[in-house]
Length: 206
Ligand code: GAR
Image (cartoon, rainbow, N blue to C red; front, side, top):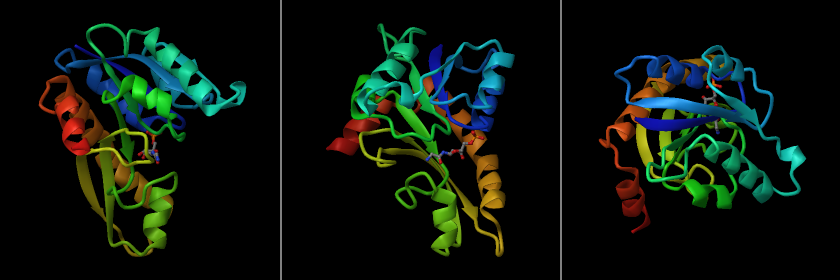
């Protein structure tokens, strides 16, 4: 059984999809903790499901690296990133760039979901940037996190056609409708070793 630590900053609809999937005994992963950089509304999904939560605020640290160390320690307290079974850290709407030390601590068992077809439109405003660029198609990418911003190896993508006159919120919601099941499937495939993160990240480096 793969142990998951999920990191969020917002409403947590991707987290909710993972919680619902993991409630099925045949799903091969369990969420052992949910962390945030802020008192995110989505933490309520975890609390309602009896999953432990924690908040590690960057404002309470002297540096980004120190914040990353405190975040890593909070995750490791729940048995992810320690011992022979590394578990998986899932950034599902965490709106912070994880510091290099944190990435090295968990790599390659560290994934992110991003609302664009990477390498297009990395960063915090992917949906807005796709609309501003006049893209006719965008989507979602689940990828391994490396030390760059949204540059790690792509695991899975799903495409969405941009509709004329669509707002950022409308497009983002349509992306999320594909994103939630894509994330659930990708985590399942990592748990079942259908996706081998060690091998994929080694191939990406060579
Ligand atoms: C998701 O669409 C995720 O891809 C995005 O935030 C949303 C969180 O939604 N992440 C980023 O933009 C990271 N650069 P949720 O809180 O409803 O799961």
